[in-house]
Image (spheres, rainbow, N blue to C red):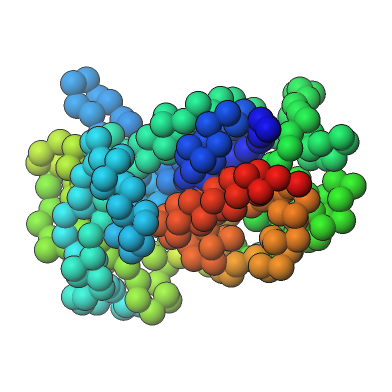
Length: 350
């Protein structure tokens, strides 16, 4: 039989699942619906060009960690075009701003010279799936198969199965009043998953800082800043002699300041960064960018039984909130596993 699959969201988990399904079911008709212009979800990158100078920076998920054999083998073995290794360890700092050695010093971390979004581009590019960008799905329902509609009134389907990849709260909004009780229960379970909010400032400087680490992470989780990453530690991202810092605020700060004027938030995070580094030059960046992630980091995973029950009715979910670990490699791992499950369901037949 020809499997007709609709995929909502083009994040890393969906890309991994689509790759597995497409290769297991060569005749499958897979359509991916993505609300934005890009792919890979919160594993996001931007490119900034100033004259002949170009910068690449990752303002969401910062890298792909070598923490899962299946994921690492796939990336290094098949999708290694433009793959680069992040240089340097991760150190820590506490609420007083005291910097210390030691966090995953020997761990390997990867990204791509043109940005982490290359991961999803590689995965989708190795399939025959159709990716419909700038298509925001508004409703999911069942009527002789699964059907969906977008915010512009477009209708799609019927599909034999659906795979959803948005953050849990957005998935919950879609899985309401679908006319299938198990799927509605999955929506209720997704709504119960709590998230941490993260507001990110990207700070650019026309000088290079000297540091023995790639990034600093707040170990006691009591500082206004949660993370400071150096994009110049990623080959191909920052011109020689310059610095680009990705500064992610703590969840409490981010929630409180989420809707404040971006210029005020950037100035505050630059000031904190200067204090932590002991370098007042960092309080005055030469250029800056920002991004808020209201649903950045899931605090827990969704109820497994709700996921399994909905799958029996042809609705699947994937992502870090399904894996129960707010890490890019976990999202990819879960996507590969979910792809196996979807493919097996079609191969087994009714």
